[in-house]
Structure formats: structure tokens, C-alpha cells
Amino acid sequence: MITARGLERRFRRKGRAGGEVHAVRGVDLDVEPGELVGFLGPNGAGKTTTLRMLTTLLKPTAGTATVSGHDLLTDPVGVRRNIGYVAQGGGTAPEVRVGEELELQGRLYRMTKADAQTRGRELAEQLDLIGLDQRLTKTLSGGQRRRLDIAMGLIHSPALVFLDEPSTGLDPQSRANLWEHIRRLRTDQGVTIFLTTHYLDEADALADRLIVIDDGRIVAEGTPDSLKARVSGDGVAIEVPIETSAAAAELAGRLSGAHDLEVDGGTVRFRVPRGDTALPELLRALDGQRIPLTAMQVTRPTLDDVFLTLTGRSLRDAEERPAGEPEVSHAV
Ligand SMILES: Nc1ncnc2c1ncn2[C@@H]1O[C@H](COP(=O)(O)OP(=O)(O)OP(=O)(O)O)[C@@H](O)[C@H]1O
Image (cartoon, rainbow, N blue to C red; front, side, top):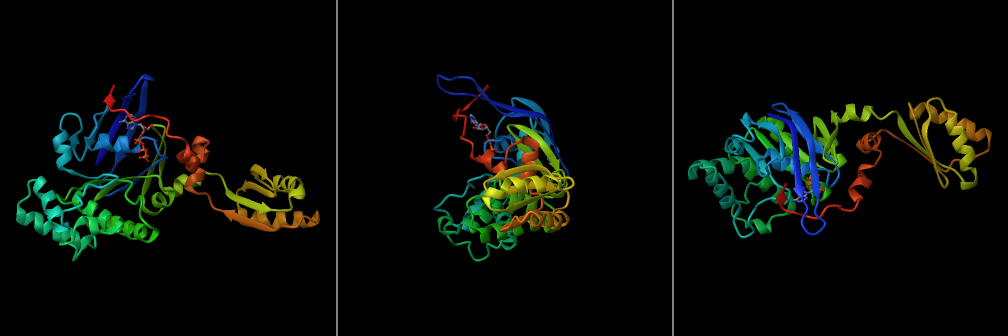
């Protein structure tokens, strides 16, 4: 469904500072029909820029791609006709009724009025928008509007749809509901889905396969479970009185396979191959030295741990880094 090789995009910086931003630095991608692929990375990693290139909205400065059987560079119209794209902010006009918006979208794809209406009703049913066709889009809830955005992206029945940060801004219940709809598009309708997200839970819950991007480069690829398996062992955190934390850390360090030991006040953190079997041994050792334990926690590896292992930074910290690059609009 998607094959991309060496996709790159540079932007020229506006203003006196000059220079350029290398937003995407040679991305290779392969997506098979029927896959639900998550493109995960922190803010500014290059997700939207990659998506905009794959959907013909932005010209790559280097590289090639075939999307839905059409060459991105020589047949962008063929690509556009055969894909759906749901942008981050959506694209609904506020003063238009839901039914009209769907029909208009179908007409933009040269569908007849009757076909657009029939397809609009079908999508309303699939995406739980029944009974809303006379409502102005501005009166919809966040979740309903997002589902309408997706319906608009699917009006021409593309086999491949791109969703850019689909659940941003939704409350937890609406997010869970939207995820269910996205899953069903794949399982019931066979739509291939390529979605970007910077939410670890979304990537974990939805994607068959994840492609992790950081600073314009792909840094890992695999199922959520296979990526998590790259992180060696469980995380253990114990709380002890602050004056005993050095002694507790020494005991933890003696556990078989213990690594990445850290002390932060009265908290001692480390990794071991199996947290459940290491803890009883540690408890006995702490007891032997009369060090009281006030709390303990064992955590299975998360996608954030994967990101940390791969890049040396936490995905959350990476998101919080200041947006370094000013907005510019010229291609280099
Ligand atoms: N038109 C542009 N002009 C200059 N720089 C840009 C432009 N568009 C994107 N960039 C820069 O390219 C980098 C990648 O941006 P991009 O929007 O692709 O990231 P992202 O991973 O989608 O982030 P987010 O999750 O915030 O949408 C960032 O440093 C961004 O500032």
C-alpha cells in the first residue's frame, strides 16, 4: 500500500537567522494492505511532514514513494483519488449541516448526488453519526466532529486512509470510542490505516505495527510487544527512609541481573530480568539490615522505555523540549 524510499524534506528558515530545517531525513516505509500502522514520535519529530508528503500536500526535497499503487511524484492525482486524509484539525466548515458536508465532499470526488448521499448514510451508520445529518457541524461534540472528519476522508471509499493525530483534544471516553471505530474500519471494512500519534497509549492500543520517528529519522519499527521486548527487564521502584537509600541501593545492586540503578531521595529504581522473583530476595536482604520498606512498584516495560532505550530521552521529555524551529514556508 505504501512504499517510500529516502523521503526527505528540508525547509528554508525565514528571517535574518537563515539556514534550514531538515524536518525529514531519509525515511523508508513499507505498509501492507490491511495493516493498521502507527507512526509514533514526539512533537516536531517529522510525523506530519512525512504524512503531508505521502498525501501529495507537500513535495519531498528527495526520495521516492508509491502510495496506493501510484507514484507520488509522477502521478499525484492518482494518489489523491485513492487515499483518504484526515488532517489534525479536521476540515469541516462550522455553518454547514452534517449531511450536506458529506454530500459536498462526495461531489468533490465527482460522485453523483445520489451516490454521495448513499455513501454518506452508510458512513453515518458505520461511524455512529446517525440522526445528526441536519445538525450544523459547529454544534457537534469533539468526538462526533472527529468521526465526521473521518467519514469525510472515507467518502470516496479509499482502501488507504491517513489519520493525523486522530484523538488529540478528546476526553478519555471519546478517545476510547474513536479507537473502537478506527479498529472497526480495519477489521470490518478492510481499510489500511496509517496514523500518526504522540500518545503511547494510543499507539499501544491501536497499532499492529509501530514505526518510531525521532528528529526526522526512523529509529525503530515492530509490533508494540516486540518493541517493548527490546527493553531489558522490569522496572522496580522501592521507597525507603532517605538515610537508608544508599544501603538499599547497594542491596538492590547485588540482585542477579540488576542494572540501571538510580537513587532519588528515598526512592531506589533499577531494572531486573524478572521483577516478581527479584522482590522477595530484596525484601529478605532489606529485612536483614533492618531497612523498612514504605512502598514498592514493579512495572512492565512501556513504549516510553523503548523510546528512552533507543534515543536516551523519554518520549515525554522529548515532547516538552522547546519548539526549536520558527515556522517558515519556503521549500529549499
Ligand atoms: N512549513 C515549515 N517551515 C519550517 N519548519 C517546519 C515547517 N513544517 C514543519 N517544520 C519543522 O519540521 C519539524 C517537523 O515538524 P512536523 O510538524 O512534521 O512534526 P510532528 O512530528 O508532526 O510534530 P507534531 O506532533 O507537533 O505535529 C519541526 O522542527 C517543525 O518545526
